[in-house]
Length: 73
Image (tube, rainbow, N blue to C red):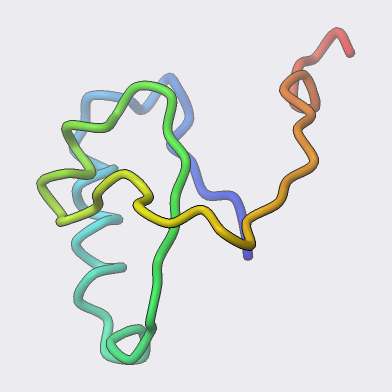
């Protein structure tokens, strides 16, 4: 598991779409049962790649640290 994101200064250049196309099409990932992602504001983008809201959250757990990447934390 990893975090991947596009830096804010590079938003609007189509990099998210390029990255998603690669992730969806790369052969080594074709046998995966599940791909998960979390987004605060890009639901419409991910829906274009067939991502949907979770139907079954049984078994999912989390440690939530929303300020972990804040520079002032």
